[in-house]
Amino acid sequence: QVHLVESGGGLVQPGGSLRLSCAASGSIFSISAMGWYRQAPGEQRELVASITSGGRTNYADSVKGRFTISRDNAKNTVYLQMNSLKPENTAVYYCNARIETTSVRVNDYWGQGTQVTVSS
Image 1 (cartoon, rainbow, N blue to C red):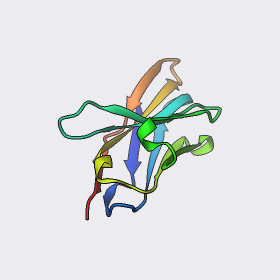
Image 2: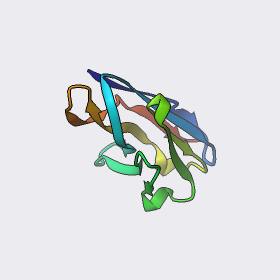
Image 3: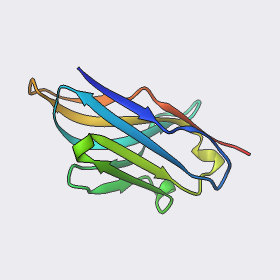
């Protein structure tokens, strides 16, 4: 069993900042890519940012320069620092991780989602 638990969402004013965290636990042998996705009402889920085990990052164009993804491999945790938030960033944010378990199986796992609301 593998679980991803997110935290750090909430309500913030435009221009504000939030930091999301996602910790993976369970029968983990290794974690390759980790990432954050978001889904706004009526929209498809989209990639926000991703990071490899070696630290290579990738960002959606709309968040470049404002959001920063990082990870702590020792803690199996990925972070998303979000600055200069805009109302259009309002969405449910989901953590994703590609995990090889101790039973030598590789799967994509998802967190339960955390709501981010940017509003005055």
